[in-house]
Image (cartoon, rainbow, N blue to C red):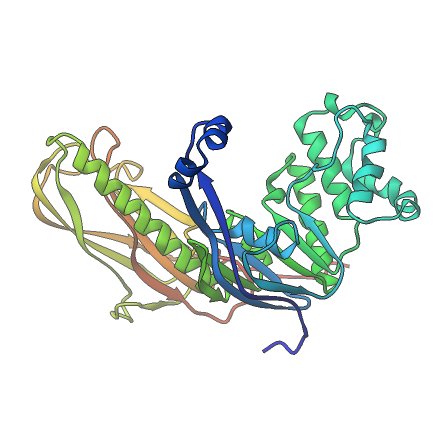
Length: 400
């Protein structure tokens, strides 16, 4: 358990917004009494409490509209909570809306000084760091051009370069690591890693779960403005993934109800993974051992030209392996009634970790008949000599 002091305290914070459903401002002015009847309160945050220790990197994740950005803006002081309080210790920089404060008629050079002053930097500090800012942005040839002539990528790169030179104790990042081209993204991620090594506190909002799992030592999942999970990245992201899968299944059910009756009804009724040595519900596999995936399918009516898909994913849904009978060159007979299928993976080349089997059925048009993204689980345990989901034999020799 960390003994570092808390630098952020979010205490029972709620934020409510009023949604007006009138069509125009004129209606609201001329009919103030009637206007009140068409107001609706939206709770973006509902009693959120968090304590964040110095030096930690915390991911805020959740579906769209869950309150992630609202919470980040509340922590950054951009919006004030309806109730509750936020306490901070240290200098804060927020990478929330890059380019906020940029003036299109000013040059890049002028906007660097303008934006730096908005972020609380003195002119002397900006003078000392100006060359580093321009070098980081990579747009030195255009620094004296009006930013209204910049591409969107150039605009964002300059804004990010200014923000990361604020020298913060606390850094708030909201979906800005997805901007720019690949070399610039790598540069941004390297800067985040540098901040981590320097012991700075980072709060990251992102829909990229792989990115969150890589950078964060703690993940908070929000839904409908409330904290539904808070803990180790893999555990918290598994909760989010399960919610996404449930939402997807509900959407597919609604689509099926609207579709014509010619949609065949076929579904998985059982999926299991086993090894020769472990027949349990969640077997433990050694690297290179054989894994067998057994599937039972029931079709209420005949399904012709169908496809069976099997995949292996991480707990957060990253696909590591995927195949279908078509890829394997196997033609399946028409499906009707109860059937059992077995897929053998003779040499499982996965590293230490927990994994999930995903299965799916498609008809001849590519329409999904049934999918089970979390059909069963298994684990790989070994004397780990490397990290990552791939198990490979490695030899290291000194040649000189």
